[in-house]
Image 1: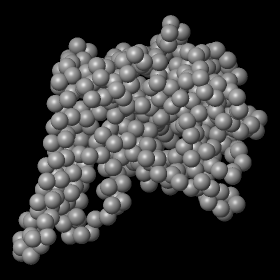
Image 2: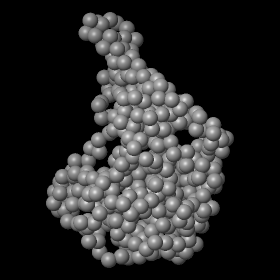
Image 3: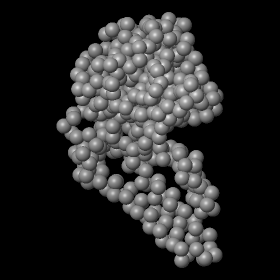
Image 4: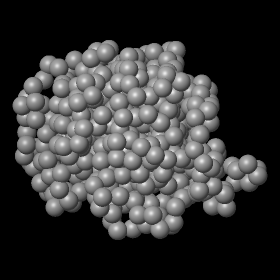
Length: 437
């Protein structure tokens, strides 16, 4: 499958689905059919509307949609997402709140690079902004990155996170969600070894595969069944002709989306059929619950082939993080070196992506960290999405995380964002040559 034509064929299939939806919407929604006493006509038009929107949003990067936040003064302050650390494969994004002084809490959200954009954490960002200054890692779609930009694998990812940690300073609270959990842990270990005083104040790990074997799931079983050769042959494609990254080897987001939907095919099928009926009855809205969720869920991005393959090989198969044997550029990311960063683990009881136990394994690896600086929480009846963006996050987990942050904020009061401090990519090179303002 490693051909540009196969990538373009997949994209052509998506376009065909979008065209079929728009055609059905236009054809069966024609005014001349309005008097036909048959519900099938309205249902077909509704199906077309739902299908067109679904296929169209698969290639559109969602907006953050966070315009204002209410401050302690009761006023609404304008929020502007600002790139303070630009890079070829991802940016460090700061949510600048106009007219608000520096907050006591400074939080870096490490977003997943697992097929969705960082906007998957939009509700997480929105819930934290009233109480903290927030930064987030905003990863780029690999199909838009020229081949000349080079490679980006798990070592590059980890080095990038470590660079952001060093740049933002020790009075930082890091929250890693899902896929980057083990790599954020390794990045903290690199910082601890290089400059112990620069370790972040806290690290909250939410539903990530530190030890995939601790609690097998369908995801880990798939990784165990497939050889690396099979995986490379079946999953990796070369970006097609019309994108800036033409020729780059990637794991396509559309292929990842197919896997996501297949895991819960019945649930997604019912959701789309129910939405079709709501549209046919005139009960659906542009920003109803279905559209809010699927506008984000269906918006997918490509990952570099080397990142995807090295994640499977080193994190899942070889279990390098779980064995404390992970190296970056020949340097051992020894988790035992973490001795100042308080670590909090959050898991969901019904998580079918990173089952309970996979993330909890991190605490046993932190041999240099005092017991009093470790914590864990298992959220009852919560699935994977709920523990960082759903009802469980809002009602239970967010207050718990903020309390943990406050309990371990034992570094000097924050200075606010540092002017003139260059953000680095982890290799010592300035990212894009720009400084935060």
